[in-house]
Image (cartoon, rainbow, N blue to C red; front, side, top):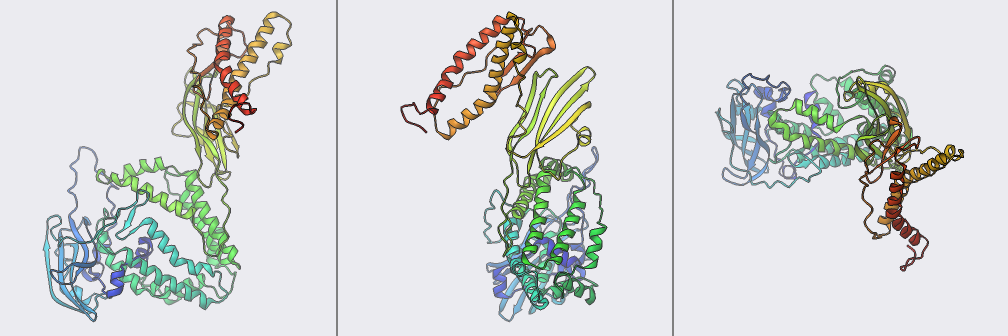
Length: 624
């Protein structure tokens, strides 16, 4: 099982030079006495040392892999190797050197690995290895016990610069290249699925396996550094993977490499992929669908049992593909599976929480890998999001809305406290905007109101119980409400519906008339700056209009502004200026309010008159 699992996980790839020369590297690291070097599973950083305890000695570092040369002093022509940490048990570095005489030429080989005196490579291991082609001559083995003591002469390979939006996952392939080349191999099989002819299905499947083997061999060649090099002994596995990839010329031969697998099991797998009767589903899959696997993995990167959901979606996709009788149904099954994964990452998972987890798991010397891991995940998500299956119609992509993503905090009377975040373009898979409005008693006698906006999906909406249990909540949530909407900016936390002033106009006293006038002014002030200014800014950008500087925030402070203390309310406008008023419009100093009105009138009349003049086409330059 290990060989096939390695083949699948590594991702499938190998060297054009090797394909032309026919040279096969030794795989002693994974056969005979070298088997132990491929079985280490300890991941650095999974069990960091407790504080105040002596840090364990770092693992030995060795040259691992192979290099092929035209002669003992000639240039390097092929190889797959690096210098990196060994498994914890290793106490020495091996270097095996020999001449490999093949029908198409003679090569000088240097092969390094981590070992112990009991598992040290021997020349007989190399001669007996099932991947060795030709004769092994002039063989010698040396061992040493200091870091990198077995490193051969420097490689003359030139390593390309990895793009900033990609990661070097294998020596000769970035993650994007690995995914794209692998999918190119799978494309021909998908193009004709589902198959009425099982023989044609298996023929195309075997072609796909051979193609994937070639990609594996190509991508695993060379000595360029990769983000996987921190795994002890990983480079020593590559020759085994390449040998396995080359020997797998069909699905049947690839499955046959799994230890102890029987022919009936091989036939069952092949017939499951290429059934003799179209549209018939394997009963085992139907059983998994009715009684799904529950792993219940506890993690805080994604909400819910994300691993259980991934297994469920995979089974559903497999069942849908087996039920398919048309290529369109195959397309629907694969597109649904991809959309489920992308949507789950964009709406249920947090890259920041992933960072926190990695900082706990990875040791200090591996923290530099965290940005690369994030890039790698985004590459995989982008790949699935943009995947176009052969022969499938282009599924129209429904753009995600713009949503407010942040939190606004106020006192119960509406006075502004803080605001973070802003409007963002939500990622693919999001189909609505959400808002949480809460009354939060953070301490006895101290209550705040807050509104949190976020990108949402109709299938993954949070609940108030989840809000109350959130790790960021301080104190108790006295009330909670959620709302959802599907148009851009629809969860704007700043929108205020101002109460009508009719109740003041209904009065006949001078006081009520003055309150009505102030009410109209305040409604204009809030309405104008929360709605008209947004239109004005957009209009200015779209039409490249140069306008005088907009008025600055007034320095007015609402101290003792209202006769009724709890009637004070302050709104934060689009310019982040405070607009304060009394909800009952009963002011301590009405003359001060009249002065505010006059200042606003003089500041904004010129701007709005210019806007109206241009919009009616009376400007010298004509209409826009």
